[in-house]
Length: 587
Image (tube, rainbow, N blue to C red; front, side):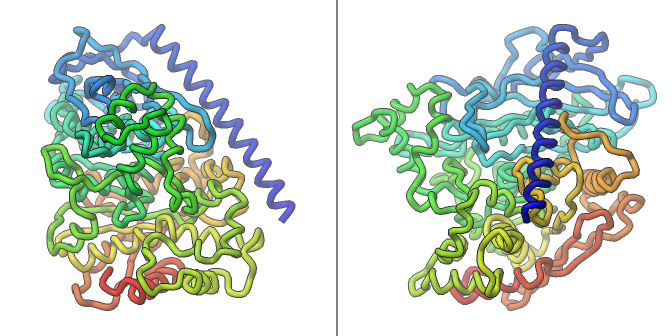
């Protein structure tokens, strides 16, 4: 165990050095391109005016164009704070130079107390392999498929920056990629209906970005009738809510959810109105009107709102493995820009209410994120087994949480103690409690109640030299693919090491890119990807609504992908049994 910890520390130092070195290089390039832009700078006319980008070269030597920092909304400041975004009608300059990303959203860093960013943050980035009619060889070529990516970060941090999300490998496959920023924390998710703030402003930012793509992407060579929405973690949960939203569905044609489906109460904000009031009290408000709460919070500097957002946490949330205070809410009224007004369970269990295809799954070691956020406190789960009972079970009347916690403990740990020697078992439990079980439940509902939804399910299981997050977390000794490490095998982040093309890591990257872009082009991940992934990816089988049985077929993504049934050595069946026992009508 000592050797494992020492190795984990060495890998942590190496990962940090990579990130620091890569980030410095990115910032230097970012400054230089603004001061000394390259000679080839194409201009594209969109509805709001003209944008000037940069022509550059992909890793494979092919030419492409990027346009970074395109404003897609009015700055959400002043009286626009907390409210739905206002579309930008005209640019303030004749031509907007879009050589480098602009400000990130105001945010508190997930792993530290650092606060950074700007309240004026609603910008998007377009990466295209070719522009319409730029050469004779492209005339008559069909418009390109479009992939719109929503970043993660627990709804409190992150950005669409190419520091993390350079889509080089996607663009090589002849697709256009759009990334963007949206508001975070209380600025994006404050909910106070009594004062005219229905919540989900950040999700409405995302919807406005999708509308911008629908309106303008043809000018970059893209096909507005072939748009794939994809996201990871909080971005995955967001994409899932848009998948369920009648207002959003008209702007895309298929969805990819990587590590997060917002199908249960676990993913929604706890006591949102009380959170807003609690935050206002922290900043000195002593009244009892929601309008007074709003006026107080409108005057607080954005940086202070981000810095002190944890002051709004509820007592129940303090005991959770993952704590994200400001998150989506189920809105009270259906409006032109509302995102979700029904519980996802109701939508999913309304027979034949969904039609768009969905590709969705998790990483095998999702729980590594929770191990990191808990620190040594995860050992307390052994002494307080009721903490092993997830929000999903909801503790109905008559359920003894201690007894159920002991049952869960026996299943995962047997008679072994909850300590450093059983950290892999704790990872399995936290993986299931935070992400995997909800993903499986969503899959079962789709199989039972949505006969016209084609659903492809996956489990990512590879751990290689590009898996930096588990090394940053100093948990490289834990088995499995960490939450977020799938992204390291898709995007060309500035801090990733360069590895030989014949390495396992590059093979896994090629597999991801082939599957994701084939799905974006054709609606099926195996159509056009067989040269890289010989195995056919079959969708999840449909079952009768009254069936007591459900089998989850999924693609295990590794160096050699394979179809597997019910991954997890009985864990899927264990949670289905508990749900049937304590929430008999749930499934």
